[in-house]
Image 1 (cartoon, one colour):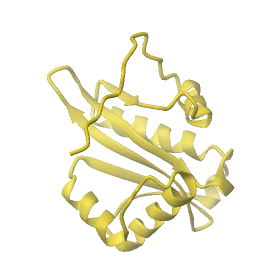
Image 2 (cartoon, helix red, strand yellow):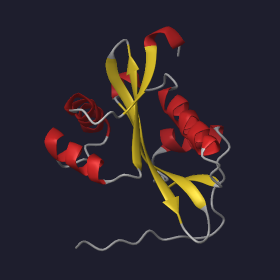
Image 3 (cartoon, helix red, strand yellow):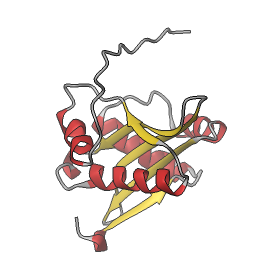
Image 4 (cartoon, one colour):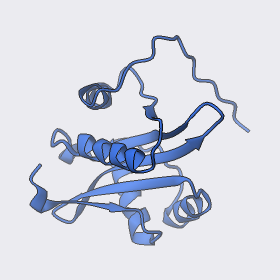
Length: 147
């Protein structure tokens, strides 16, 4: 991707940023189940969550959601969601955003960056593989409970 038409901005708390995130999500995964005001409230109260948004020629094209995790085991960064609108796929945006996440983690002196990816999500798997992420040798099962 040529730098002149690519711009990466961090979520700035505005409704416009929320609209951009929701537009990307709707076209990529449709996983965020709220409106712009609801998303703004969620992102405001979740202080350890950051979103980087990639714009191509001013159009919202992709984003990466990042969660800081500090546990007795490590200080790290979780890639929560990596989404690219279909018309902007195969342009390296997900790779660029993930590289930005790695820069943030290094600047914060974090121990690692992790991601949970569905094995069927080949494009995301390819991004993480290309950037040297290691696959777990342990057999983990993701558990959750609706409340």
